[in-house]
Image (cartoon, rainbow, N blue to C red):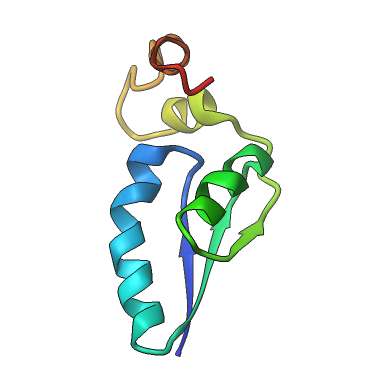
Length: 86
């Protein structure tokens, strides 16, 4: 089976999917992770998974602002910077 896993460029979204992706690979499935940020490709490959980049034009704070939760992105940029991930 061919499986495409999509992720926003945030470790909190991507890392919970890594065990599933590896379970699929271990049973012989063809797995590809698609993420919209070039800088996040290194995170995906460090998890041992193949990555395919897509162009979306949104950064991490824009993803949170585009979510259905009002105010979700207000402090995301500052939180990312404080965590050392920026």
